[in-house]
Image 1: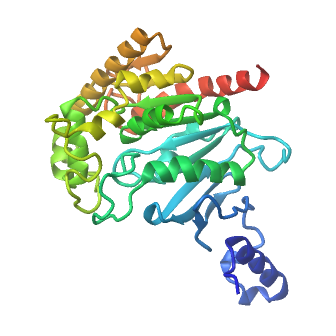
Image 2 (image 1 turned 60 degrees about the horizontal axis):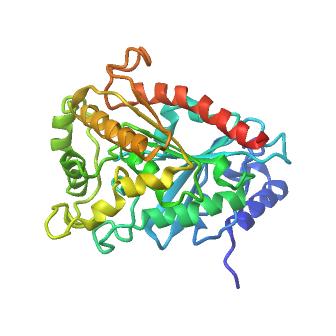
Length: 360
């Protein structure tokens, strides 16, 4: 006998609500609960029954499992307000990649991502997943093939279950901090999927010792040390990067001795060979230049922009310095007071690009 699918379980809930007295039916079957799209399992993803978090008809989170990444993982979705009212319309999609120590709910700090012109999908990237298929798959975190999970499973799963426009001209990948490097890397690894990418305060130059040290700090779960260099040690908001894993777990040895750092170099979003893959992609970089972290991401962003220029690839760099030109909430540092404002600048430009692709 086949196990019930999430769709069948939801159908049973509706039938129970209709047949049983209200006092015998749990709150999950409330008639006034917002309706959200049903998802069908596929591409190696299995939806966890009864785990959907519904905040509204246009803001919900599903939970999935996959052999590629240990444990259940959430995918938050923001739909345009017209999604249900226009059942024949298809929509562009933007994938938002959160930063290290973050989760899918970080997207709530960026109002611009709740666009009426596109679907926004926020997949879990792990506390320190680095948007990569790890070298080591037997650490304390278990299976960690994050790139495979996102690019070969989540993207086609979303296209199969939501009314998307499934082509690169109508698909973007954006991210901040750890997610900023992931966004640029994904656009390079799969230019057939993404026609637009944006990195905000991203660790996008893996040749920089500071970037490699950041990866190592997350692997070793050194939030105290990281808070010290980021100026957050007194805030009580130091990130937890999960269990300790080997310092070579993600990319192998970081030391450039006899090619030991080959995986770092292969992933490096700033490598000219990887940047060349963006020749037909809209590229945008945002960064401040204040504090220990954004002081370094500004250097990385300038390096990437200079290399794009030499390759003849258009790219837009917004170095907002101390943040005064961007927003009163921004001081040029590494936080959502700057990132939310940067997305408020970027998203209308992305919406315009999507619209131009639709009419072109």
